[in-house]
Image 1 (cartoon, helix red, strand yellow):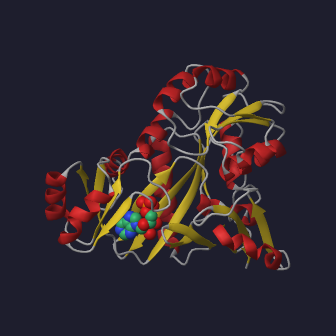
Image 2 (cartoon, protein in one colour):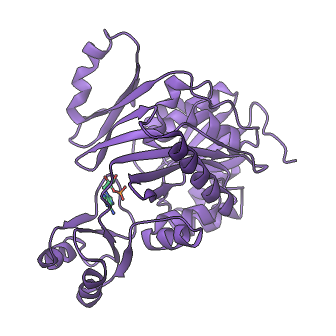
Length: 354
Ligand code: AMP
């Protein structure tokens, strides 16, 4: 039995965005302090954390100082440079572990890992140059999507191919980055499972949510998802299999496409996930507390859903709706404290109890 971190212990979080902010709030409710490591100035998580270290991931001295001040390290995004992880791992436990990061940082590695587990993904092929591209299009056909293997998020680093003739333009869009061509999945719905695994192997999944994207960015998540009981079971079993295979500790987001032939895994995110924000209003223990519990060696909490919820993201100018939302019943508002609203920037979200 691993020891539970006690109140007063400090959790280090790599990344200071809204996810780090909400993790930090959850941690403080359990009596922990948080230190944030973030290269950017004035991170949203800094408003609610005990300490912020503003430094580059290449700054060894800053990484050492960060590690020295914390009991355990977790993260709110997956693209942490390997060199920083090598150093930090030698100093403090990192949860979730390196394997989860290695798998989810690279779409090609991720798809191969999922297929090895017996899970279905879109058909895919690696594309590094025009020759690979011609072969991949011949093999996979169109429609298809070309994606960079690394550093893609919110639909960035992606180009759609409607016809084979689109191949050259799509390849140009990738600007030479190693890429992957994926066959287009004709899905009826996108769902996600927010799953948690504790330090002793206990697994708990939140009820699957139904996701709607706009311009590649999550727009709403609604629970319950309009899927059968059988499909719901499939979804959580798939997520549990992924967590076990990675010996995972923490919360993970698993995005799935619903198709007539069953569930297809789109991608996994080794962290709390935007499509899990509804848990703040729908569950006794939300995804943020669940993650903190797991990384602190606590037993997982009760994530059972007790309400129907619709989560709406506030993107860019949507922030202007706050006065109206503040007058709306059964609306739980979360704002991230970002100074400037830019198009595509996540400024906050609202959980409507339905
Ligand atoms: P991703 O960044 O891979 O999560 O992709 C963003 C969004 O693009 C997904 O949520 C889907 O709506 C859509 N998408 C991505 N890959 C595929 C695919 N292979 N087939 C159909 N739609 C996709």
